Image 1 (cartoon, rainbow, N blue to C red):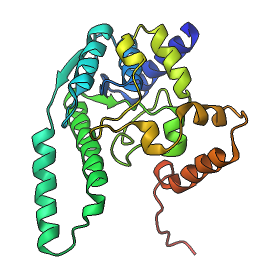
Image 2 (cartoon, rainbow, N blue to C red; image 1 turned 90 degrees about the vertical axis):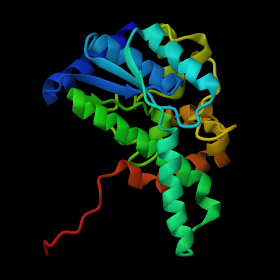
Image 3 (cartoon, one colour; image 1 turned 60 degrees about the vertical axis):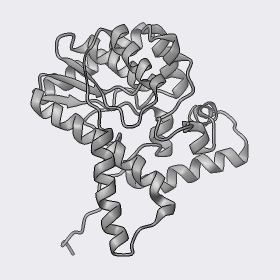
Image 4 (cartoon, one colour; image 1 turned 90 degrees about the horizontal axis):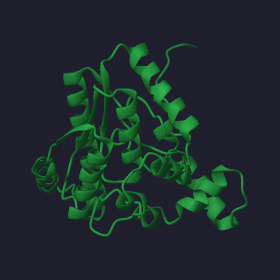
Length: 247
């Protein structure tokens, strides 16, 4: 783990030098992935790293975990509550759609969740511009492969330092980096709505995805589900399709 951490830290420092920015910023949710990234960027840029906590109807437990992470990492941090901003924005959009008989209530939960992720992305980039920092992503290998992230939301970042690490490997990194046990052992959740969990929403366990990514045997039904998720979300990982006038 020491070698892995040193390699990632060196890579982060190289990205800062290559792009000519002054430091790194990450959103901290209280989950294990953002906790690991926060600890890594603090090591890479001790004086020029920032963690941003952005609650939107966030549970008290997640807020406590996020605070525990910044204290454990010793990273500079700021909290910006986006709850009212998200609610006001969604209500304006919903009202206009209802007036024009376009509103689809069945999609409300996901629309709100995606709007939350995209508001957080916009907040991070506003702060990054203010500081001349890069926005650092927190996606791990399982999330990236299955597309379990919001396009232009938590997927809207400048660099991805842990994207080749499985969820299990991220947990090993977290243990090495002394991430608080409350974060290390909690059920993975984006805290998008009450009772939401990653594995419940995906319908598959991270351990199964990790095993698939490592080339291990997994049951046929689960393998097919992972491959279907990968195909369905290909647009999130690919460059934007663009029309070409070349014949």
